[in-house]
Image 1 (cartoon, rainbow, N blue to C red):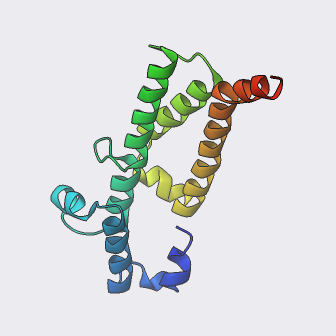
Image 2 (cartoon, rainbow, N blue to C red):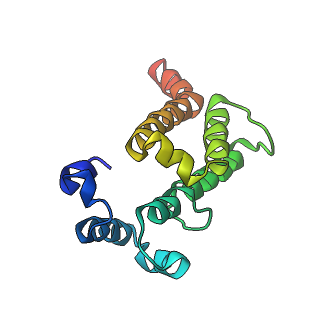
Length: 144
């Protein structure tokens, strides 16, 4: 995401061989190239983005990771529905929103802008996880 605009150079290069080579390199960097090609065939920015962000079955897609993170958090808390702390609430909300997005919604907002905002919200989940599970323990240890 960060290097994409720098490496590509000009908007007219979108869809060029250089552009497709960079997208292929991205897929290979997350061991997704073969799985992607089996599912979609042709390399396109839209389909690659959809695969890496919204695929429920590809283990390194954002949505799949959120699904597994939510299940893991529910195992820790024993929660079977809803949420029992702020971390579960934020993670569940983020996952649910992603489940109901279409890749065109993301591209309409701008891929970079969407990913930047998503990372900020994921950082919020991280802070909530710390506050829910580690902050209290750290305070107890300081007072002992």
